[in-house]
Amino acid sequence: MPVDNSRLKGFYKLSIPERRAMLAELAGLSEEQVQAWADAELDEDVADRMIENVIGTYSLPIGVATNFIIDNEHYLIPFVLEEPSVVAAASNMAKRCHAKGGFTSNNDEPVMIGQIQVVGCENPEDARGSIMAAKADLIDSCNEVDPILVKFGGGCRDVQARIIETESGPMVIVHILVDCRDAMGANAVNTMAETIAPKVEGITGGTVILRIISNLAVHRLARVSAVFTPAEMADKGDASQGSEVIDGILQAYHFAKADPFRATTHNKGIMNAISPIAIACGQDWRAVESGAHSFASHERTYGSLTHWEKDPDGNLVGSIELPMAVGLVGGAVRVHPAAQANVALLGISSANDLAKVMAAAGLAQNLGALRALATVGIQVGHMKLHVRNMAVTAGAEGGEVDIVAARIRAHGGRITQKAVEEELAKLRSE
Ligand code: NAD
Image 1 (cartoon, rainbow, N blue to C red):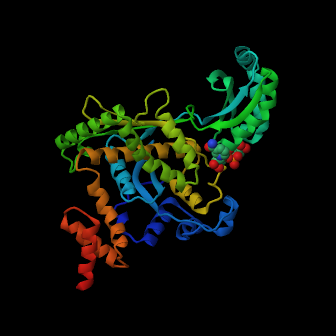
Image 2: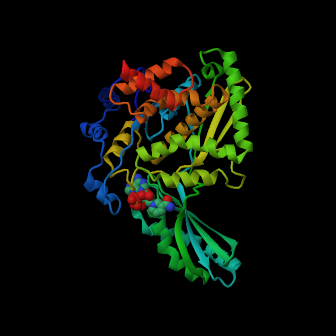
Image 3: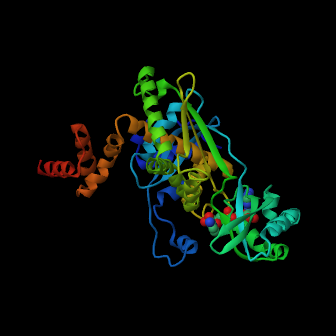
């Protein structure tokens, strides 16, 4: 179950152990789960089983984004990343759609595509026809491979075939469409594709080469939308100022829509939320990333993964649509203790829930960047939070870090590494 309330006032002021204790209580976590957060390092035996040639582990902060209401339920969302101001921006923006009820999802079924490449067909068009005629039999053969997936309501749903022209001549490309339920599905789909390959060769008279999942998961799209009122978009609740902010956001969005140079950075901002949640929850984040960017140029010039417009009442309406190949069984999610704790914090029980949380966070993150860019610029907020890293870079230790950061922020001027170094020298001379 997600939490009762994601609005954690003053959470940022607590110590790290206090934050953990509060979340444990709110989300009903076990001592073991909380301990997984506290143990900064992954057990080496676990690590050694995860990949090859292990020499150690590498840790990053886990931060929690607050204020998310999705489909009328409150979520606290774990992010694993190195970049300051991302978690704060997501939490801040998530709060700004509460008046209209928060985020609403409308995801596809979890259907992935497996590709089977057939070369050397005497007549590719006839081969394609033969595949289509044998569709029912091919679907049955796929489903015999994974009775567990079928038992959980998944399995092969369809078979498609098309001919592509390549430098090696025409190829028949067969797609198996597999409902992966709560799995990301790469292993499941690859096994099916490999198993039915001999049958495909028999049907087409060609030779099968590749049998592999496609990360362009166009049948497994996550869709989330939200409405932000002018008063919520304002700095301090002034609706007319909020309307100006909304107009600026729309102009910033139209820039991304029209220009791939901008759209790439715009989408990077969206992935600032999506990839950290994927990592936090033990997902294959490269699969999610490749699917997202490919979808951003699928059947169009590379463009925005989000859509923004104004409704007749002057509210800002935002939506996001992108492939979301994530799972709660398989992969690393059941192996990595911190990933398990993070999934428990989310209180989710299906891959679909994780997909909608990631999409909602991506939409909020995008709004955070657009709003900052269209108003004060991105650097003000970012540098304020980055200044602690700068103090560490300058050599500050222990309590010095926060003192230097506070003094630099209090100056209110431009935050530069030189200014931070000077402030540290001044502090040490006092
Ligand atoms: P998996 O094979 O470990 O788990 C999926 C299996 O779990 C299913 O086939 C099913 O038999 C079983 N299962 C039990 N309960 C289920 C439920 N409720 N819903 C669905 N299945 C259930 O993992 P996977 O998801 O098939 O593969 C994911 C892994 O594949 C990731 O580690 C990923 O990194 C890796 N991978 C990715 C790519 C790629 O993205 N291109 C390629 C190869 C491998």
